[in-house]
Image (cartoon, rainbow, N blue to C red):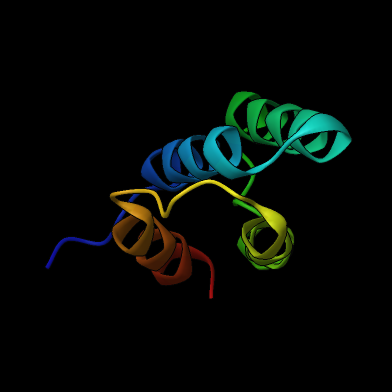
Length: 79
């Protein structure tokens, strides 16, 4: 198994954020993801996953098709 890259992690974070998050929370994570990509920082996965879990709990959207795979990718890189 090939270890996922930081770029793949940021892409997964972006996809999940755009689907589940709204308002200020979405704006915060979009800015953090963009800044992390530009500056080459290690992805802030634990904080992101915490906020994502909260957003999922209150979301009325159906489960995202690739949610489990994207979530696992973030966990693999960050935790």
